[in-house]
Image 1 (tube, rainbow, N blue to C red):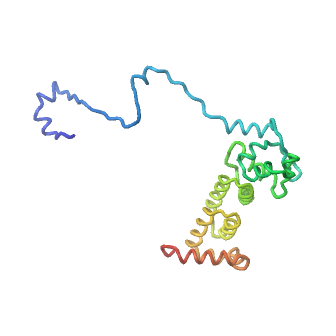
Image 2: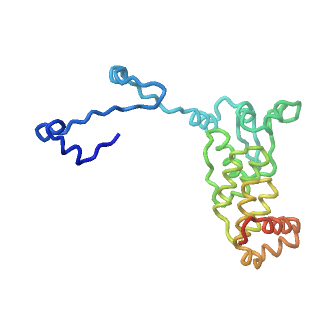
Image 3: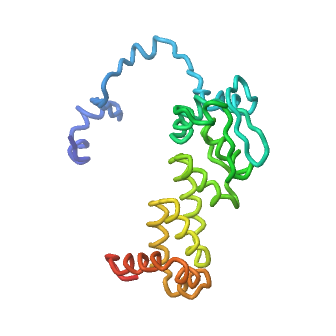
Length: 229
């Protein structure tokens, strides 16, 4: 596998002809199949990227071939039952069973604001990450209500990145309310790491009065932590 420099130089007549060193290398390629001659001989075609998400997005933006209406705060949005049902188990149940929404092809949504609804629909159709900004709480509610698990995790991640001493009590409440397990774990870890500061905030004192079971859960989490914070 190796040769010492001294040994190489001691056989210059055999190894270094005209001060040139020729190396014979054996290369092993580890993969299923490779035919270099075929690759060089056959032309390749650049396969375009899949535009499925963009195509679905155009269906939503242009209201093409719609078959149901969603009413949010008095505004009507045309949509497609098959896409809603494929993406959300809640919408699927509405349209599968003999419910008013299925018979009239009309769904009235009372508890979402239009901008939150649009963010949810931009996820349902083209699968885009919504621009959450200040409405992460509301989008998390919508994702939980309509069982949009990936969107829910996106909201959890956004809230986790925005954790602070002042906000952490409210975030813990949201995580518990919407059964957001990932967010709840991260929130409890944050509280444990900043306990002395968090426990002095007004939001935590409100938590103690209104949701004592969450305070007890926090204490249990800190007590069972493998390392003291």
